[in-house]
Image (cartoon, rainbow, N blue to C red):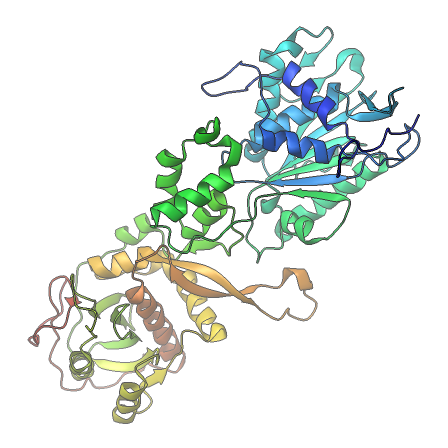
Length: 552
């Protein structure tokens, strides 16, 4: 008898209800405060199962193909929503439960049955990723009703089903031989980490092809991804394949993460039934909200993992601990050959001037003009002070080359370039190709770069992150999908300053260019008087400063 037909608009046949009932009868909470209690599905989980196990109305039992509407699915949710325990429960249902279509009942209802010889793989990039799901599988087997099943052999690295008629095992992307076996189901943990680099995406593709040969299916359990990396998760979501079920809560961007009301509302949307306010286990107003606002974490990571946003990833410009260890006592000496980096602002960000000594590449903060606390809205960077500081620096040292961002400072740069021809060069930081080279040079040398120990420059360096910009054109013979991206500098979080970091990168790049152009060749030092800056190096627009010795 065929399907009975819809009893209400939009209804479709599915094994999802039977699978969900099996899970609630046979699975337990694998860890946490409710460890060992019956595993209860949330409404969101029920909805996923109903769709994932959707049947075609004309479905026929095996050996007829394609009874299930979807060949695979992607579950994209925020951190701690419960993806891994849910994935573990589905793995057990695929091993023991009614996940294969076995025909229609006399009432026209779908009937499910266990797969006779299931081979199920729990896949991840590394053992740590795989364990997120795999350890939950073992806990549910050892601490729930399935522990009493006769003939079940539960080992740490594999599960043998009764009578040897099936297996569940974890695997990483390096286990090529195990991943070539004929699988019936696979979970793919954190596919946002499966990129072309390292061949990870090729492994995932091989797994999915092997599954298709057994009429098997797959489930991706993922967080939001970096859209510049071309991960397996991104490819799945953007494929447009009508036989892949995509389940996510599309984010409403929170522009200001310090806006408590907007942040809480979006976190509640994203965590849904897992939020404590809705009977779940996640305390949004506690640790989640705190960490989503905390500058201890990169903003891109907070947006991806807590708010489900697909944003470009970040990496720290400098390792904070190593940077601190590279502070060196000492001073610039009269007539030292230096390169300068200048990053200007009008009123919101800081204006910064950094020197890099040609002989050893050490960075020295020569000035930073920041908005004073409680400054009125009309406050502006004191440009006359900046000009006097620049002139004092050129008088005290041999400035071989200056790279200066002209944004909002074009008139002064024109004057400086005319006064010191060939030694002041415009360097627009928004020109990706040029800035990419400067960042790459700084990154490559960062482990050996020393500095004067300035607290402000250290703070700015630690506030700076590297993000990916536009894609570079692939080199001849390079795979298009492997094309790299230009590097850019950005702030690690709202309200943080990075101008001294930008100036430091420009200064170091100017030093490299000066050396390439012969800047270390002997030359008589000009008459020079060393320069002094305040002990903290911060110039806020009040008063002038004496000429003396720069020492830290």
